[in-house]
Length: 280
Image (cartoon, rainbow, N blue to C red; front, top):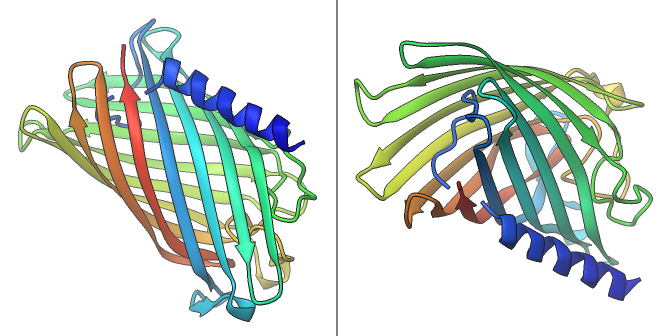
């Protein structure tokens, strides 16, 4: 079992480096037919606090902490000029530890597949809709620290992007979506507000508020000793900040920091990211 997991890790790293991932990506825009965007991220999330049911940050029980180290491969591919395929694949190594026990899990996490359809474009702006499904079949949700919440999700999202080049070399992007979730997990409202800009020929950056509002009440809150960052019902707001460097027209590097800002019934912490981006 150990050997199989290491082999799987080697495969995903190798394939991701072969096909891997560019430049500033704004959510509402679609890719031309045959064009693609690839992104390989190495992420580290650390937490020793939770957001409780009142939204207050509290220490994890028994001096506990949680660490999620994972690779994420993200793809966008233009099926046509108006339609873009979206896919995400995760490989995770999770550690949850306190004064009494230590649990570890590694393997593939949730698989996400979607389509983005451009509805309108003009005057520097674009309006799109996006459908996505989250598939929890790559892991066992009975693991000591599950690699995901174990629920199928389906989502529909409306996205609007606007070029800001008349003001400065940048863009803004706003998204709102509804996510249906199976079983005991309650549905969610998803929302994004994003601003990005170039800083000269090589450097660029972005800042993004990424939020989730769960449609639940206090009776729906539950979480055993599992993954505190993948509870079934929660609220969460994160501030995704990143700076990137274009090596050339195809390759780029990004570094990012994403602290959690607010939430309920979910881990509070910071994610550090390093990414290779590729746009052939």
